Amino acid sequence: DNQPERVAYFGQMMKTARILINTPASQGGIGDLYNFKLAPSLTLGCGSWGGNSISENVGPKHLINKKTVAKRAENMLWHKLPKSIYFRRGSLPIALDEVITDGHKRALIVTDRFLFNNGYADQITSVLKAAGVETEVFFEVEADPTLSVVRKGAELANSFKPDVIIALGGGSPMDAAKIMWVMYEHPETHFEE
View 1 (cartoon, rainbow, N blue to C red):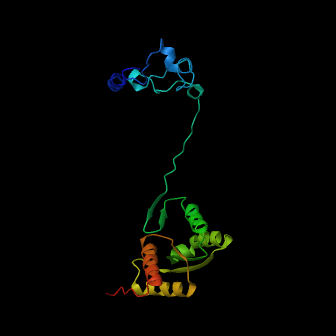
View 2 (cartoon, rainbow, N blue to C red):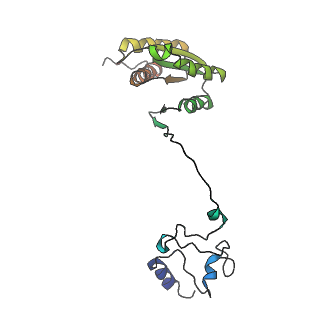
View 3 (cartoon, rainbow, N blue to C red):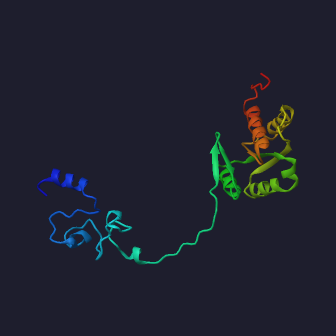
């Protein structure tokens, strides 16, 4: 205790999980008898340096056989530009929950005719309507949308006045929705230039 520099140097050089200072036996390393830094135990975990999987005192949590069964579930991925883009199977409830908890009241859903005709837009509108969010769907987006289609969607946005725009589908609905959003919030923008 009276040579802290020497103790610190020794501690750095030794590959061990514990160093006992002024204790008469290894019992000092398992807590309670000579110090109060460690929980009481009768077994020392010596860590990977000593061939053990843990370096803390072995306790009841280490002696319980707990089985975990895990099935494959890919993590949902998202990307902010500037708001959230959710993708991967199972991400729709989380995305809609964000729309609802953020307090949005009017949602414009931008999608293509195939997804609309097959009921995918209904999965969004039913959840939002149940939460008190008014919805409008623009489903005229085609592959590689033209500026005239985007203008039609922006006109709908101008009349509906959404506080959130949701793109449902692949790159075309997402691209169209982003340009509609700019035209709606910044009508002074000219895309021909």
